[in-house]
Image (cartoon, rainbow, N blue to C red; front, side):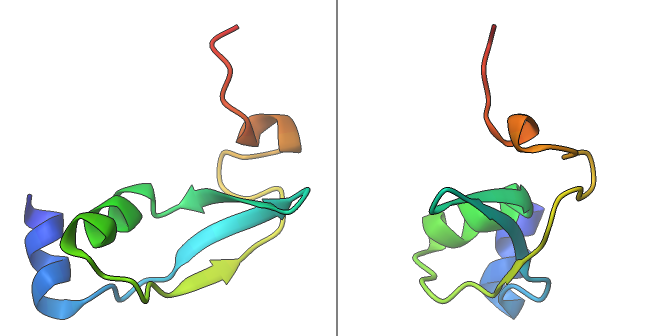
Length: 68
């Protein structure tokens, strides 16, 4: 809840990082900030496209969640 309160007061200061693959965007940094912004009704969220590898995401297969 601290994050949501901070975003409500100060907005999102750090852009959400995403990778684009096959026309889809996958968030690789800022999942919680993006969710908080959506819950607060903030539509204009700063975003920045990055390339793989990024943080713990090494390949495209790391972007797609699968329980198997």
